[in-house]
Amino acid sequence: MAEPPRPMASPRHPQSQTAGAEARFDEPPASVGRSPVIPERYSVREKDGVRTLECDEAPRLKVVLDPGMAASRSDAGSLGERIVLLDGAGTFGPLLDNEKKIYNLDHHWGCERLFTLSTCEQALLLVHSGLRLSEGDWTLYANDPDLDTVLALWCLLNHRRLRELRPEARDVLLPLLRLEGAIDSNGPELAKLCGLPSDVMEATERRIDELLVRERELKQAGAWVKKEVYAYTVEILRSIDAMVYLDEDFGDYTRVEEIYGHVEVAPRCVAVVCRDRSGIYTVEQHLKTHWGDQLSIIALENQPGHYTLRRMNSLDGPDLEPAYNLLNRIDPAVDGRPPGKRWGGSGDIGGSPRPRGTQLASAEVIEILERAYQQPGFGARFGRQVTAFVIGVAYLLFWPLAKQLPKLDDVVPTTPELYGAFELAKISLLALALGTVASRGASRWRPWVFGWRMPAPGRWWMLAPAVIACSILSRAWIPAPLGTNFPEFLAALAAGLLAVAAVEVWFRGLVHGLLSLDFPVQHAGGPRFLSRAAIVSAMAYSAVTTTVAASALTGGMVGDPGVPLSVSLGVAAAASLAAGLVLGAVRERTLSIASGLALQGLGVVCATGAWIWLS
Image 1 (spheres, rainbow, N blue to C red):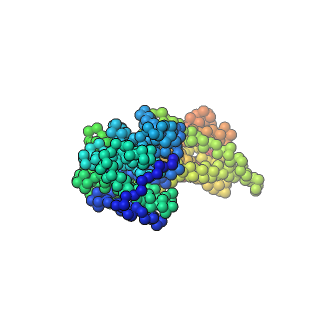
Image 2: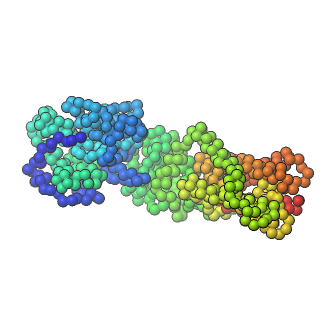
Image 3: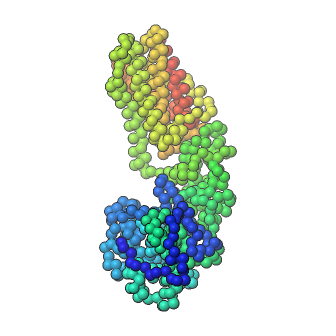
């Protein structure tokens, strides 16, 4: 929208008549008249490539400045809840949707501009009408930081203080909003009818001139459209602070060195991740001034990589155990060497692994806290189990897929025994390649979460006899038919080892890993139990193993000492299920798929020898 002409700057401010050189706004310059004792509460942050402007005292609000923003009513609905569009960021009429919490503070579209309040005056009334900006995370959108828009942002970002301003501060702010609103809506001539006494009008005009100095310099230099919008907006916000506040207004102001971010862990319960060299209890007092009773969990980094977790309310606040559990599953520093090197502590206070701390970045700590406390519902959790099982059973698709690849006897003459070993190896290579890529992608390139790491020390090798027995009984990962001469035995053994490598990556890596972040699992040195991830992966493993064994048995390609087929298949199913449960528990307690691979490798060596002997 075209802006009404502005009154020229007052002669008392000759600097406003000087054309500014091309300015850089990488860092906000000192604001006009800003006292150094008034804290600089505004900052610009970037997350996932999106820049936002934030205020220390309004931690649940973030401002997005996008010069190209022009959202329709349907576009605004797709932005989510707790949205405020300012001064043309929404291309539709003024809107107060209290149900969906979408507000469009506009006086350009779908309204009679002559009779509609400006954006900054709408923001003032919205705050005083009781809009709960402290509850839930809000996003404020603007497309051009003119003075009307920046004043509206100031009202929203200062909503806590706005309701309790000193009378002297109100005498500065309210005329400023009234006059700027009248000028922006109807131009300087009609603005004279805004109802301000002449002395107040004159003082307010001077203040507006001060705030417009930078805008006029940029426009005169032809640099307005090229300005760094975030730095410019921060500068004007700080200048408004200097006009409205006195240093004594911030006698109780405290701040933490850096706030990394926050997440909602329960209704009206927020976890804050921050960095400060002070102790946890000092930081707790600082954060309470901004968050009040919503502050629930603090994750304080007081040294690089060393975090303290603190629960604020020990009676009804969220417990720290879910955070410990998930942090331990994702943090690569928790490697089981020794088993006690973990996130942990009491239900009220704890910390990161000692002595070297965590290897997680602050953004990962925020993400993990969110996931730990915002667990999916029963339907979503059941759906994930079904999905993981289906992915496990999908291993059977590698057989028809492998048939599309060249066959060994197309290249060189071969025996049935070598042909069977070659086909099993070909299938296994396909599964190994796809399973490796899929598990790394599904873990968001944190492969250690899906077992791609060195095993933690322990006595897992003592389970080798059980795995060997199950391998002999299940007979699935043995090439069929089996040869008795040495080359055929070596080929069968190599194919079998490749096969168990593929199934470990697929079942104990991919399938197990898909469930390990949503359900409790064992850990090195911890209590023993059967986890949901181990059970589902074992069931899928048993279904595939039994199907493969059935193919070998019905084809007469694996020797069977006169036992009925139904009994052989039942034994194979039970043995492979037992093996899957054992291997799942080993994978959890050693944190690695390598331990299961070693056990299965030993099992396939013994099973191949045993079935050759039985044949």
